[in-house]
Length: 257
Image 1 (cartoon, rainbow, N blue to C red):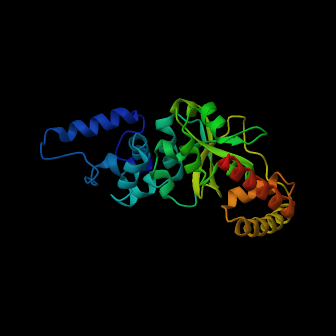
Image 2: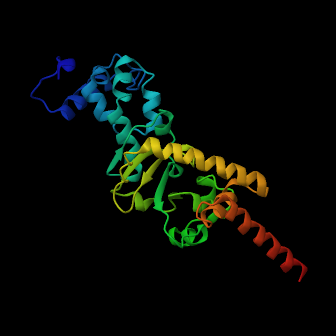
C-alpha cells in the first residue's frame, strides 16, 4: 500500500495495525480517534476502508467531515450502499436516489413491497395478505379512499417483517403516487420494463386526468371516487355520472327506509 510505505509490505495489514497501536500505547495521552489525523493508519485509504466499513450510513456522514482523506473514503458510493444494506442483510440495491439524504434515513419505512393489482384486490384484502394495517397502506400510497386502488397499476405495501429483506434485491424508485423515493422489493422478481410508447401514454394520462377532474367537480367527490366510477363505466363520462346518480338515489332510499 503506497500510502503506508513506512510499513513492511510483506507484513499482514492486521499485524501492521497492532504494531502501530502498541507503539503509542505507552503514552496515555495519545488517543486513536477520528481527530487523530496524524496517526498513520488513519490516513491510509485502504486501511480506512476496512475500518469505516463497520460504520452505519449516519456515522459515515460524520466521518466524511474529519479530513479530505476520510471524506474521499466515507463518501464513496460503494461504501454508502454497503452500509445501507448491512442492517437488513440485503443482497443488492439497484439504482441511485436523486437525494443523497435517502441513504441516511435507513429505517424500515424506507422499504416497500410492490404489489401488482389484479381483479378482486381491495385495500382490506391486501392488508390481511401482507399483515399490515389498512391505514398504513393508504398513507404510504397517498390514498384518500379505498376507491383509489382502481386507478393504479400497483400499490406499495409497507414492510412489517424485516426478515423479508434478507438476501433480497431492492430497487430505488421515485413513486409518483407515494411522492417519495422508496427501496422497492419485488417478490415476483424484477420490475417490468417500461413500454416504448411512453409519450403516447403520458398524453393519454393527461387527457384522462382532465376527465376525472371534470367528473370530480360535477359529482362533488374526491378524485379517486371519480376514477372509480369512470373505470366501471368503461371510460364513458356520461355513464359514470349516471352510475353515480343511481348510487346516490339508492343510498337516499336506504336511509329513508
